[in-house]
Every structure is written in C-alpha cells, then in structure tokens.
Length: 191
View 1 (cartoon, helix red, strand yellow):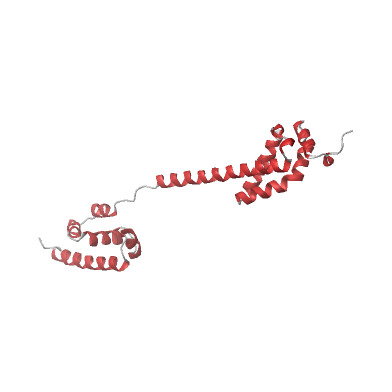
View 2 (view 1 turned 90 degrees about the vertical axis):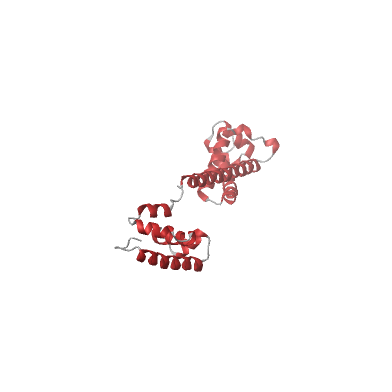
C-alpha cells in the first residue's frame, strides 16, 4: 500500500505527477506554491501577472514532469528557477509591448497642422492677409498661433521656445502694426 500523498517526498510526488495524479500536483502546489508566487510577485510587482506566471510554472510541471531531476537539486529550487525565468521573460515581454505601443502612438500622431498657412488661407479679407505678411516673422508667428491657432501666451511661448514676455511683446507690437495697416487700407481707401 502506497503512503498518503502528503507523506511522499518531492521526488515521489513528481513521479506521481508524471502518472497524471492530480492530487500529487495539488500537494506540490500546497508545499511550494506560496514560495513560487512570492518570488514572481516580487519580480513582476503585479499580483494578477504573478498569479498567471505561477500557474504557468505548475502547468509546465504537469505537462513536463520529466524536466525535474532530483539528482540535480531540490524540487523547490527547480520551481523557483522556473518561476524566476518565466517572470523575467514576462517583464521583458511587457516592456517590449509598451515600447511597441508607444512607437505606434507616436507614428499615429499626425503632424501638427501649419496654423499660419491655414489661417491665411481662411482669411476672408485680402487686406488682413497682406497686412499680416508685412509683419516680422516673429510677430506674425506669435499672432497667428495665439489668435488663429487658439493658443495661450504660455502655449505660444512653449511652441516657439521663447520667453513668455517676448511672445507678449511680439503680439502687442504686431497687433498695433496690423491695426495701423488695416486702418490705412480700410474701406474706402485704395492703399
């Protein structure tokens, strides 16, 4: 008569697992499951993934019990090596997935529209387009981004990589010049 499962040593338990004895696998899990799970959770830092990897380790023992060789070491060491290896593979796999997703997001982001060209094309007033064209590039860029692009002074400053005060000055001076030019070319004037 064979001793009860809980009295078998690890080597005998693995032999029983090789004969598809589910009770033997349950006993192996009872003895070593917490250690395997704890190691995997420390490596992964995620409880749900740690549960999955722990399950993979014991399923692998179920499907390939012959991989364990009692002559090479204890079952606990074997399972912990398997667990560590699987956890590291999962970390690498997750990092690769995140990099792929980030790359896909970067590639999917369309180039920002040329706000200046859109604003000038959408202007109904030829006089305004001509007046804008007479401003310095810095003034024109700041005004177009702020008024036609809907950006705040701070956003314009960040976009143009300039101090906020410089952007405010360019907009103020540019608007004053625009007002003068538009007044000079207002209705009834032929320029």
